[in-house]
Image (cartoon, rainbow, N blue to C red; front, side):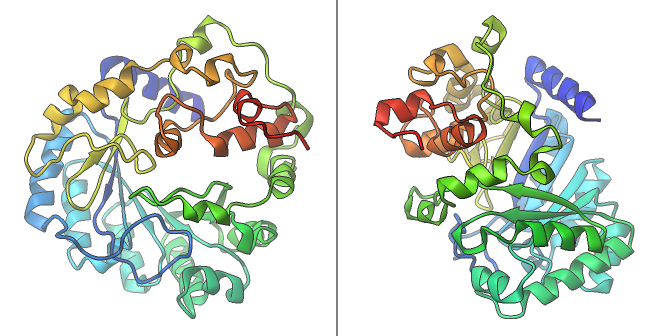
Length: 354
């Protein structure tokens, strides 16, 4: 399945088709997670009528995968009307939620509407840690109950675990909890700066030694740790002509206020669906055209790095550091933790190995 999706995504990029869209329905939330990169005050989110008019535009543009998220999307009373409309248009709908508002009836309705999968964040298997991160007492218990309801309806559920200093040792417990509940598990060791540019959240990132441990854990990276941690091979011409990721190429993000960005982690304003047709933004936005023009060989620091062929460099994180053509410090840290080979950016900044 992975190779098939990679092939489909490559064809979408070649044809200029926006295969996937992440649409945040609201930034309002009933949790106040310490690491959240969003503003939670409603600044005039799109109405049902506006979203109802947008969805056919996305379908006509070729969008197939539609991720509905927030904030907490269940805070919108019209969520299931939006899902129903999206399914009528044959979107493959994925839902991201904290699960707090999901009870048996909501779980049954999510299944009835044909939602493909649901992703729910769990920060720790210990209530005192999870609830301290969400700043919502009792949130772990309600989230676990939601996962049980969803799994009981035959839905695919992914438990997402974001690593930070507050929960750095808890991911094995979360992985076990996910297995017990019948859900899959995914882990992310990257904290994202606030969408408005505040980088103070990065102080929550785990330490270098903890990241090294995660990158060498067979349960996270697979059984062949030695192969995973092997120093990267030299970049060939295909790698140098490559692109960083699908952001702006076959996928994009739309905020609750209609703003279009290459990705939720790449807050480069590229148009607004309240004043422009989606297809016009997708095809003609100067910002998206710039994103699409960049190849690996165009990166002044990264193109000369030993990791250039294997790095997971995020252009959005690089953009929030100052330049979409620059390095992403978080991804440099992951490359170094994985292989022990110092990166070009570390060398440039005078960061020592160790």
